[in-house]
Image (cartoon, rainbow, N blue to C red; front, side, top):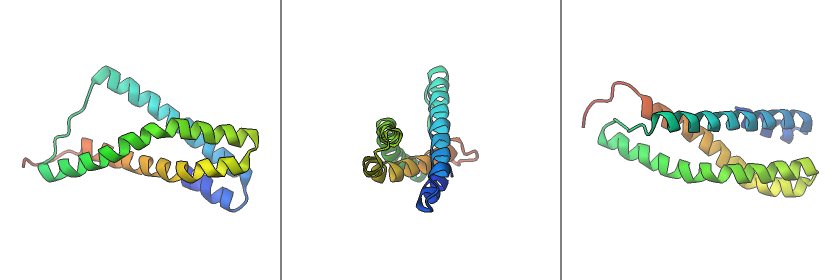
Length: 124
């Protein structure tokens, strides 16, 4: 929601609101990544327990989500670097790629979580 709000604010010319939304999104994403890594370093891998058709869907989403998620820290870092330097045109060029990837990873991350932790899967 913060990513979409930040984009809407900058489209309206509200640079200050955009900055607040995007820095909040970066902060929450960083907090999520730290908690995700901590959780999985303690608890290990969680196996998908759904039926075959759901497993195929789960892995197709996961196999796009994971490599795209790995691109985000450097992309966001470069976007922030240019933003703080005042290089608006360079910032916009990086964000053309960063925004849709970040949005996709955010949405698919929630989808993956619900697919992985859904209760009541029936056997194949």
